[in-house]
Image 1: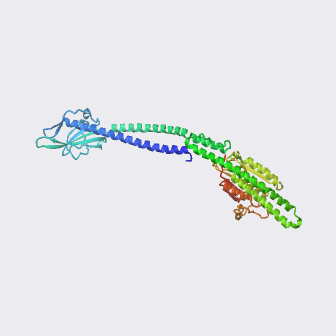
Image 2 (image 1 turned 90 degrees about the vertical axis):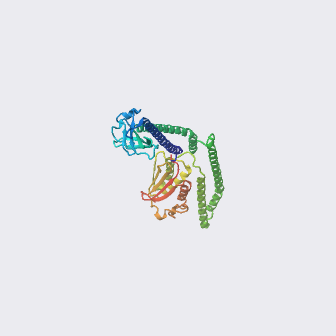
Image 3 (image 1 turned 45 degrees about the horizontal axis):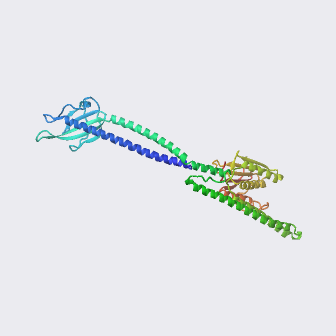
Length: 452
């Protein structure tokens, strides 16, 4: 989750889901407990009504007269009652039972009601309440009776199901509303962050110089610090380039004097003359390398994107002229519109050295392939040639500064070394040497740069 908006939405959604889930379960549990308490109180009231209608029977039992609740008289009405004596014999049952036996647990002590859920022998689920009383039938005659009342739980379950359905439907609607509100809040709240990102993109493309100072309080210091860094980088780059220009100008004349003096030396001093000329050439090439390397290190990668095909085609025309005597065929395979955000001088240095190395060793053919890494975070250059190739044991060695694959060739062995340092140190990429499909060497470079 690399998006700040996505992180906030996911975390807030999880918190909301947990909160509403706990709320729903709590409300459902509270509704159920309240409903059960109401059922218990209603059954308790029915027990009291039965006690009010009960009278002692001549044979020692109880007789119940007219009961106020009419459902006791309706068969299978869903409300049932039964009275048992202390030995468990039924002394009275309501007409709604149709002669069936209502079996429920009995309380241990008189005056202590026992509320429970019961599944009857005829397959009906009931809420039941049993109440034990001690009845004085005479001066010395006390007997225990259990009054048992049952009510079908079908109505309770239906109400609970309707409540559960309505509850979760409303909570779902509430969650959707809260998520939409959250999305709106995020859109408005992250607006300054998106504007800051757009301004950075404009700076990266060279269309803007600094970030706007008109930022919210939380981003104002960030914008100010970034502007300071951008200005510092540009000032340091300008100072660096000026110092390099001064250095190049200061050394140019002494080197030219040395070269002229050596060339004008008498032929009798030929060994010294050749030594001086060779040393001056080495100094000149080494100085050029140092200046290019320092310049590359000081370059800013903030700027317009560089079109790679156009750059490669300019280099191809140059090398076709330089190596015209070899009659080389140079081809370029690049994705249409492939461009990267990197310093054009660095790219010219990298591609130029790779193509120069391929042309130097090729017999007749050089191929340059360029493509993105598929993720927009890097680009790959691959130069193939049909030359003699590079033995496996030399491939790491030739990437070191001052090393040449063939000591008989001209140059100081700085080309691939400069490429390696630019690629690895400045762009965090990689370079490798492999066998080319054409039969020669394949030098592959990957740069970690933004691909457009």
